[in-house]
Length: 320
Ligand code: MTE
Image 1: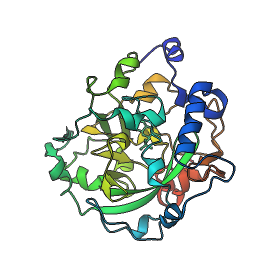
Image 2: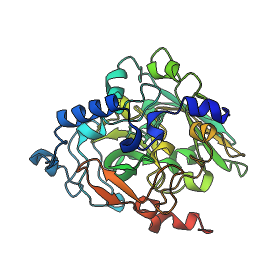
Image 3: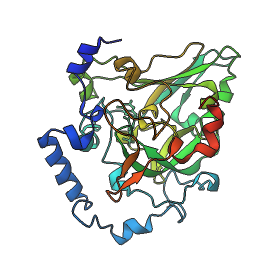
Image 4: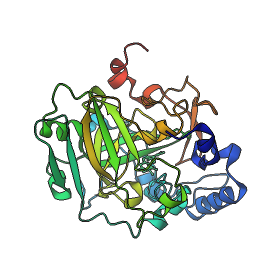
């Protein structure tokens, strides 16, 4: 774990509330970017094609087109694809959200394989094509809430994480699941710039969280293969937790007995607890979590307990 002083000296922009501390230059670039995408300005007007992208419409055709699962559809307008794919947190590439998509070009996502092992009877390495056969692909529309207090509504393609874990037959000693992102500094220009970070990016879930039907492995976005900047070719989506739990570009999934170390928790445990459920009544030490900025409209909207998934997941946390 890094000493706190070291952490303070390398604190990245996303760990501070955007409006309060974004350096002016970055802020201006972001405004230009939003203007370029047509979502800045007083009206924040949405084009007709954007309005047509609603979660009440069927998924569009594409190489990762899959039937939309009606059980996982909050029936909210989808955030426009150009925003979802160009407003990214992926620190291995850049701390500037609008730069990530420009910097992923050298990142090789094919061939790709994921090792799944640890406390299980059948450890295995699956290449990407094997992964696509783990379970029938489905589309899920999910709310996505970043700890920075912005949010999106995203159509992911993929399958439940529980189906993947069942394949390796976890033993009863497996109490947690640890996930690890690829680490290739030659292809990831952000890694060297944050040389004090405890790379690779890791995240974790309790076993019961990982087996919950809402925990999802995503291989697609808007019916297309998952873009590299969004964590292609394969990432985790845990919609009732802050976005940093949804680890990108996974190469390793390990069943373990002890709670695993995670990158953000190692950097600042008091700010990024392991559990990290979306809790509007629990402020981040440096800002409120009561509301969020909807990236599609720019409006501030109330944040919901467990990001709107309390009916499904509150029972996992009986003490609260
Ligand atoms: N995974 C890795 N490997 N590296 C990261 O920097 N950022 C996290 C999460 N997963 C991150 C990551 C954070 S803070 C958020 S909010 C989401 O990815 C952003 O996902 P998106 O860019 O697809 O919106």
